[in-house]
Structures are given as structure tokens and as C-alpha cells.
Length: 585
Image (cartoon, rainbow, N blue to C red):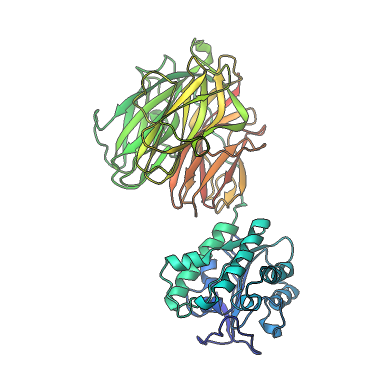
């Protein structure tokens, strides 16, 4: 339902910078339906008014993005109210009037400045005063989202001063956001007769873009439910035995060959793992993919779960570490949604503690994940040799390839004379993508990272393994414990920018968890960081660009209640599939 009060349907806008007139022409629109992101106000001048004249309007676009109720008002000559103007042309008049009527939402979009900037001219302090005048009227406990402005080229200096003031205030305040509309306008189909107002199609596209950017900056998930029921472990508590790393199968060369869509392949690892192995950690990847899809590794005897191990687009090479239970005969199943060639690189086996395997090690999570290297600061090298904590036999790490000039891959290995023929991260040109690995440590206490292409690399350490470690592993069927798209784990309908969510992903007796963390269609480039809800370092587990769907294995400490926290750098959806947890030996 839309309630619209049309006070004018004029397309003859007042020239920006001109003094407002009495009886300013204005449009107002109200969408009363509630949305998951809550109520929002939009107040603007004639630049915004076109977004109310030409639909889908800005109000409709915000409602479609999940906001509501939505109230929008814009008019010719509207300004901040910091300078003498007619009463009804003051944005602060409407803010105060609506508050008296009981309308006082947490979020406010302000599209003003074309008129005020003409008053302030090159005076930056004046521009700041005008903007702050509106912010103060909106009051504390509110967030303000304010696009930058464009002006007729003769008045570019006025727009530049105004936009600098907006950016300064955004840099100073956590509750203030600005949007670089001039850059968007310059790069898109937004023809304008005066470099300020737009035509009908330009306004429609601007409304769509603005609603998306508002959502990317301001929307947050809310807790709508409780935690999921946890699965029962499928085997005895087990220790980790490093294996290889070694390539088990590559269907580009090995039978059964290229896999059709919606098919399952049995992977036999019995020749590579110790007797009694309950689960394995393997990098599973798809290449020569015919369409968008995903891989799921699972115990064939248990049936395919609602979980994914890696996600890919058509034509991509993508992979991730999967920790999966295996059958008594040493096999697991690998499902692909689209046709693809499949590769499996084995990293570790999990063997019952009672087996007393001489190579077995136990896990000790770091209280706070630690960044080992960032080549954007240290410089790129084809092979990185990194020191790890003394006494570690194996380490759990997350690796990220950052903005390569060409496709390639990273390989994590124990600094052997030859680089093993395996991949830990596959990357394309110009992308940011993460992978994980359990890496044996060399005799000199180091691990190595090989880069096929010239690319920046970050490596984050999440824990260590040695014979005197604290924790053993209990494998479980892959189980979805977080999905912000449908409220699994308690959060819905998305994961907001810089928002931290938490969910129970393991039982209270567990001290760490392993699973697959998936970043789903973020609004902007960003990352997910998972940890045990204490202090957090600047580390990442899954990294991707806007619109990506990317997964990575995570092994990290958790809180005493079996809870894991996840921070999102960009708004989007977050999924976590638990594959097992770590308990005291």
C-alpha cells in the first residue's frame, strides 16, 4: 500500500543555489508496511523530488529492499534550515514536526545541498555547520545517510566544498554515511541538462542504486530465532594425522572422467590414510564447470546433507577444504550440482585416539587468530617461508590471494625441496579469495606458500597441532548451523556491514569447531571473520568481491557455550556448516 500526497507534479525545478520561495512545490509518499530493516525517513530537495515523480520511486525501492514503514518528502528549494528560509522548505521543520506526530525512525536519508552549497560557496566551515544543523535535529541514537551532490559546472567549486564537508563528517562519526554520487553519475547512464537533475530513466536508476547503497550501509540482521539442534558425532574422538598433501584424484586424467550435472562420485582414500580413520580433510575443487553450482563432500552411508563444501560459477576453477566422515572401507562421496571435472587433494586423516598412532597430533586453538604475513606490506615473493609457533607439528591456516594480474593458485606445504602438485587456493585475475589448510611444519619450524602467479598473499594462523595438544576431534555429518537467508541459527534476513552475529555451532564441552563458512552475494567487496567471540585481530576467513558466492574451511576456537562469532565487512548473507568439533582429550 502506498499513500502519496502530491503537492506538485512539476518538472520545472528551482535552480540550485537560488533562494527558496514560499509555497515550495513538494511531493510526499508513505509506505506503511513494516520491513525487516525497520522504519526509514527520506527528506530531500528538487534533486530527490524526481525520485518521487518517476517510479519505481525511491520509497518503493526502499520498501522492496526490506525497509518499512518508509516516509519520503522532497520539494523545490528545500534546504537544511541552517539559513533563513521559508518554514516548510526547512528539512528540520519536517523532522521536528514528524517527531511530534510520533514518527522518529532510527535511520534518516538526507538528500540536500544543491541549495545550501550556493549559500556557503567555498566556505567549508559553513557547509559543515549546515550539515551538522540537520544531524543535530535528527538527534543522537540515529544514523544519517547523505549523498554527495553535483552542480552545474560553473558551480563545481560549491559542490566540491559541500562534498568535502560530508566526507569529513563521515570520517569523524560512526553514525553518518555518505555516498559518492558524483562518481556514480559520471560512470553511468545519467544524462542531465544541468549536471544536477536527471531525466525519468536516470531518476529510476538512481532510486534503485540509492536504495541498494542505503541497504548496504545501514541494514542489519536481527535475531529472529534460536540455535539449531546439533548432530550426533559419527565416530570416536580422533587425533589428526598429516597426510601428504597428496592428490588423490583428478578426473581430467583419472576415471571416471568428466562428471555430469547432479552426479555423485565415490572417492577412495583407503590407500592414503591409516587404518581406522574416521574422517579426512581434503581440498575438493571443480574445474571445467559447465554452469553455476557447488560441491558437497559427505559420508556415502549417511546420505547427502543440506550443506556445501565449495561454490563455483560456470567456467571457474574453485575449491575449498572439506572435513568429512568416511566409511569403514575408506571412501566418501563428492557431489557436484553442475557438470565439472573434480579434483581431491588430501591433507589429513582423523584417527581414533585409542589407535595410538605415532604421527597423531592434537589441536590447540589460538585465543586470537594471528596474521603471519601480508605481502602488501612485506613485498611479493614466489615462495614465502613463514615461521610458526615453536613446537608445532602442523598448523591450521587461512590463506588469501589478493588482486592477481593473472589466474593462478597458492600451495601451502612443509617447505620440501619440491612443491607438491596440489592447490590450496585457486584464484582468477583481479579477485580476492581465501582458502584454508592443515599444513605440516618443516624440521626448521616453518611452512611455505608457493604462488604460481604474481599475487599478494595474506596468511592467518588459527591454531597449532602437536603431540601434547589439548583437543581431539569429533566428526559429525555436515550440518547447517548458520544461514542468515532463512534464519537458521537465529539471524535474518542478512548479515549487516560490520555486524557481528553469534550462534551455537558446537556443544558446550567443545573448545573449537571445524566447518565451512560461506560468503553469499555481498553488496560490496568484503570478508567474513570467524572466531571465539573474544578479542578479534584483523584477520579474514572468507574474502570476496560484490556478488560472489565463496566458501572456505574454518577451524577456530569458540566460546565456552559452543558459540562462534562472525563479523561481516560488507552486508550480505552468511552460511556456516559444522563438520565437527574439538573437545578436551
